[in-house]
Amino acid sequence: QVQLVESGGGLVQAGGSLRLSCAASGSISSIIGMGWYRQAPGKQRELVASIITGGTASYADPVKGRFTISRENHKNTMYLQMSSLKPEDTAVYYCHALVLGGTSRKTDYWGQGTQVTVSS
View 1 (cartoon, one colour):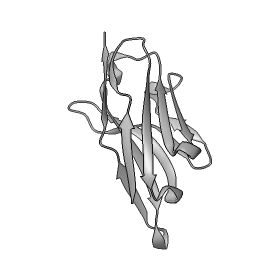
View 2 (cartoon, one colour; view 1 turned 60 degrees about the vertical axis):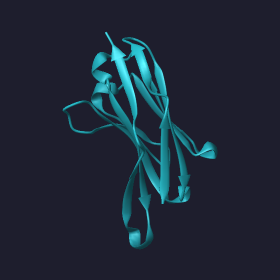
View 3 (cartoon, one colour; view 1 turned 180 degrees about the vertical axis):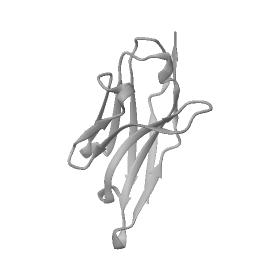
């Protein structure tokens, strides 16, 4: 079992910055990858950025060059630094962890979500 708790969302003007945090607890050593997803009203949840245990990060095209994902393993925390925010970045942002269990079974875990609102 893994528990994920996000923080850092809020209201910001276009062009501004925010940093989201995701604190993980539980079976941390079983996490093989983490990421941030977002869901805007009326839209499907989409992957924003991901990072695997070795540190390799990947980004969705709309956020490349503006968002940076990182992990501090000693703090069991993942971050999403968001810069040059646009109104279209407005969404609920979710922390995700992929956990490898017994018999190589993979399980998804989600945080509760944090609202990010970018005003124009």
